[in-house]
Image 1 (cartoon, helix red, strand yellow):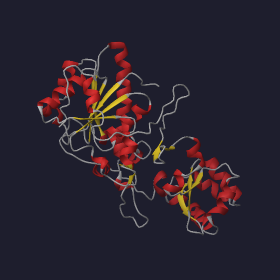
Image 2 (cartoon, rainbow, N blue to C red):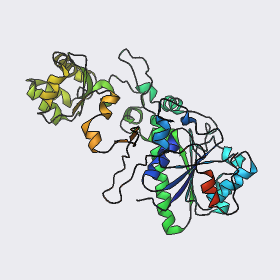
Image 3 (cartoon, one colour):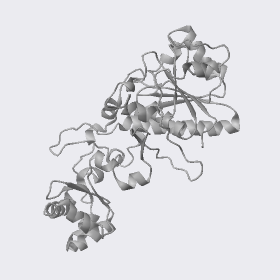
Image 4 (tube, rainbow, N blue to C red):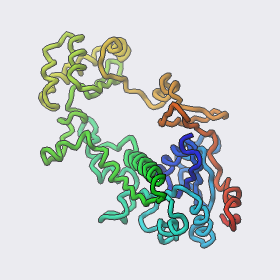
Length: 377
C-alpha cells in the first residue's frame, strides 16, 4: 500500500486529526494512537455498535493504542523515544500545550531531524486568535459559513456537516504528504501549522465573489449556490419528498425547460441569479409540486439534467452505488463502517475491521523501543 513503512504518532483528539490518520492507516501507515489514561473522547460520544462507538470505530480502525501520561516525565521520555523512530507526529492541542508538556516540535526535532510534525488547531499557531479554543461550530460561525445556512424563513440554521473539522483534516493530510515527498529529496522534515479556520476559508471559493468583486456581504436569496439560481435549488414534490436541481449551466436548463414545454424561460436562465430568475423558480416550484417524486425520477432519468432526490442518510448509505464503490463496509460482526474515498488502481487501501481497546498495544509498542517499559499508568 502507498504508505507502508511510514510510522505516525497521533496525539490528536476528536475528528480532524483522527480522520486524517485513519486515511493514512487505510493505506498502510503504522498509526500509533497516543491516548491519555482517560482515553480518546470519541470512545464515549454518540451511539455504540457492539463494544465501541460508531464514531470511534470509524476514526480509529487499523491503529494501535498506546496509553502515555504526558504529564509525567516517564511518559514524555517514552513518547520521545517513539518519536525518534517515527516519520510523522500529529497534535491538535491548544497552541503552546505540547511545548509545555515537552513534546513540541523542537523537542522532537532534537531526536529526529527528519520528522514531519503537524499541528492542527482552531485558529493556527500565530495571530490574534491563536490562543482561543474552538470546535467546528464556532469556527464555521467565525468564518462566515453559518451566516450562509438559512432556514426558509431566513433564520440561521445549524450546519449539518463539520466542515471546519473536515477541511482542516484534508488540508493537513495534503501538507503532510507534501512534506514527506519533499523529505525524499532534502532529507529534512518540517513543521506544519494548520488552522481549521484557514482551511475552511480557503474552501469558500464558490461563494466569495461578492466579497471581493463588490465589497459586500452575501444575500442568500440572490446568490447562485444559495437559492438565487433556478437550476441550483430544492423543489418539494406532491408527496412531500424533495427534488434537487444541481446544475445551473444553460444547456441543462434548456434540456429541462424544452421537455416541460417552456422554452420561453431559457433566456432568463442566462441572467444573474436572484430576482431575474424568479419566474423560472416559480414555474419549477409549481411544476414539481404537481406530481410525486417517483414521477419526476422517471421523467428526469431520460434527460441530460443534473438532478437528485433528497435522500435521508440511511437511505443514501444503503444505495447500490455506494455499495459498489465499497464506501460502506461491514466487520465480521456486522458493524458498519465508512470506506475510504482515496482509491488507487495499484496498491489500493484496505479498511481494517479492528479498532483498538484503550492501551491495547502499549506493552507491544514500547517493548520495541530500547529502554522502554510499560509506564502508561
